[in-house]
Image 1 (tube, rainbow, N blue to C red):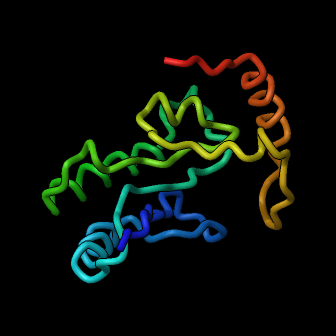
Image 2: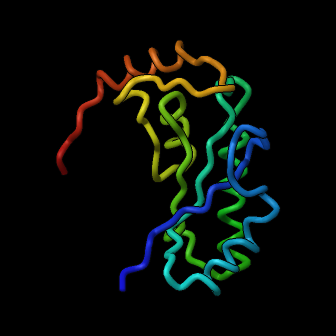
Length: 142
């Protein structure tokens, strides 16, 4: 039977309102999953970085942490890095996420509009800027 493809979510920002494993549990959880969960196929790691990171301060540290965790998981568990996808970046920061190595981005707010999340900061400026950027993008067939 076909295995369910999954990504392991890591809470790289340490924020209480975000879900995912603490970074220190990544290797042991992936190891457990690989050994004890035959119906699951690990395809990568994912994170939701802290909102509104100022890129003038350098790359988003949450994304940098996920890159480091992929290196650690692949090295310690002898997994090929090229088969370990990274999902980081959402509507407000997907371009930066792609620049630093994301293979998956989540851009639902751009497509479907802003959702109201309790306890989350309003980020309307970022959504508007990103929608403007997306309006100029075209899909090219290769």
